[in-house]
Image (cartoon, rainbow, N blue to C red):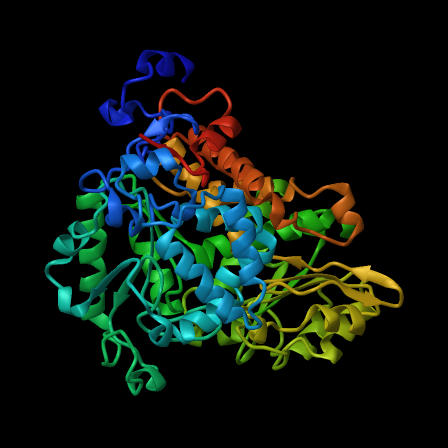
Amino acid sequence: MESTMKELGDSASVLDLDPKTAVGGGVEDVYGEDFATEDQLITPWTVSVASGYSLLRDPRHNKGLAFTEKERDAHYLSGLLPPVVLSQQLQEKKLMNSIRQYQLPIQKYMAMMELEERNERLFYKLLIDNVEELLPVVYTPTVGEACQKYGSIFRRPQGLYISLKEKGRVLDVLKNWPERSIQVIVVTDGERILGLGDLGCQCLPITIDVGTNNEKLLNDEFYIGLKQRRATGQEYSELLHEFMSAVKQCYGEKVLIQFEDFANHNAFELLAKYRTSHLVFNDDIQGTASVVLAGVVSALKILGGSLADHKFLFLGAGEAGTGIAELIALEMSKRTNTPLEECRKRIYLVDSKGLIVKSRLESLQHFKQPWAHEHESVKTLLEAVNTLKPTVLIGASGMGKTFTKEVIEAMSSFNEKPLIMALSNPTSQAECTAEEAYTWSKGKAIFASGSPFDPVEYEGKVFVPGQGNNAYIFPGFGLGVVMSGAIRVHDDMLLAASEALAEQVTDAEYEKGLIYPPFSKIRKISAEIAAKVAAKAYELGLASRIPRPASLVKYAESCMYSPVYRNYR
């Protein structure tokens, strides 16, 4: 990189460089900045050089009151801004003070979204520097409320909306997006948002709008999507296939497509259908599984024993539940060199009809069938707990308050340290709260949840709950896939991500009862995960980025976005 910088000299523009030689390697230089240091001058290009009023309205390049006097003169901003010049740090301090004045989380969410719409770098600077405070605002649990009210709070589109009206011309719709270098796409059809169900046309980067079965939305005058019942069968499959084909045609073979919030019946089918022909990843099946496995592996240092020594019971047998169970079984198989089918026998699942057992096999959906064990019929979770005596209880049901006092007390009666993971989002859908888990177990439980909970004091001791949040995994996983130029996602790459996350927990954090590292370290964590995922891609022969970087961690860090303001010519 240093030699390249010397060749550039002081007068060369990053726009004159061959983009294929960018320092990001597999991660393309979308912003035209990889060759520029943060104190080097760049040009604020849009379609042309942004200046004047248009520059202030361009969120990618707008710096608000941080434009210097020299920049104001050069870009026709004189008189369009008050005379004061503020640093980015002072802007950040001012905005955080303002955001903290709001009483309701949804108000904070709207303030953050408004900031993103006018000043992209300042938005990410706030988020990076205050991640533990702001992640619950822009992500779970507040994002659940935002999705429910999205039609009412909608201001301007930030992604692509592909509806049944565009069937037959999806490729043309993709070409309307102003960027040409796309490396990761997150796509949803909105049928199963968190634990909230069908929310129709909402706010992910690409929304496939096939209608909604949510009566409230169909009767809402402010709903922004198609007001019709969901398309199913051939009509649905044809639109999704057209989208998948158009993505590959428009952006190439190595664009990572992340499926998000699809209902069970479509999620498994789409992943199975496209995982051998496209670079795809389902966050609800694979991302959730990876982060939960990391928590379980990490918890072994507190629980003792090996993975195979423990017995697992799940409440919920949908995408998340079966995905987590399968990844735990895969890791168990890998560690013990035992057939996968044998490892599955350590894992039991309860759905709405009770324990999944062999006698129910013919009526089970295909993704539940591997978990149908030889066992007598069990109708309730409490009965399953008392009968099976699991050491680990995992909730992925989307049903709040299902880990009752009786369930937690039963888990605590035969386990010195029961691992309780109440993973359903948002907070209202959590199987139990942190306070309930610690109180009902009399301080014995090791607890983690999907949404954040505050520390709990019980009999003079403070317990800090962990958060098994997918945000630990998918940023680093996606970076690892992209920077290695991986052509397919393999299950071993998910195992590598889990192991990398588990390794980030320190002894001091274990002493607090934590099984996940703090989110304040998320960029370091993501770099470590990306490096392990990329290393596994190289090991499996799936990486196309040649030569392999000498240090994958440093390479991952070099590929990360910096929100620091740039100086303009």
